[in-house]
Image (cartoon, rainbow, N blue to C red; front, side, top):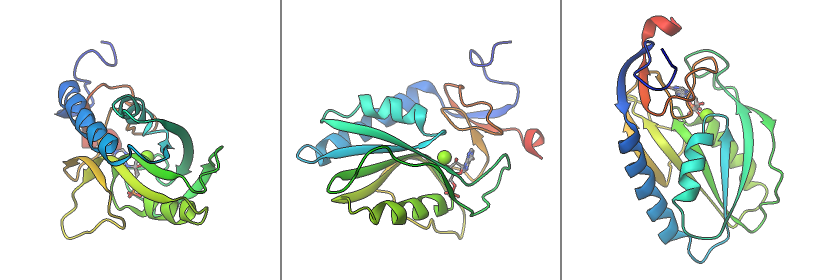
Length: 185
Ligand code: IMP
Ligand code: MG
């Protein structure tokens, strides 16, 4: 069977299909277009998970913009957050005085983004906000940062697809699905 054409055998259930994802991204693009029409927008995607969302989101935004990428490592191949964040690849661009929007695939504890926002703020951008495709709801826990743009909430399960991986696999699935626990435990 091919990797992407049907529901993958390692996926327990599909949470967001392609059509749902497209309408979420369209709505977010409209919100960002409205808010940034007279600004100097730089989208910064966090590699590698956010590249798929970045590719869709940037085409849904109808204002001039630049893009750049950062890579941080916080998860390794494990299914839970270590809280340890390390910059693996830094920006190529100078963001001083510009309006930075960090593009993320999924917000969980928010520790990764908290660290990134602190780091990027020290470079004196005009503004800095976060657009996350998914926000993982965890009972009794509050994320360390408050994203301005949220695609949709997702349950506290390990999800893959639409850029999200487990051990670098499943990023190419066109939908977001819950990974079967036996695959990672
Ligand atoms: P945080 O620092 O706990 O918010 O971790 C966020 C990062 O962990 C995301 O950018 C993802 O790379 C990764 N992550 C968190 N939850 C999942 C998941 O369910 N599937 C795949 N990656 C995840
Ligand atoms: Mg990520």
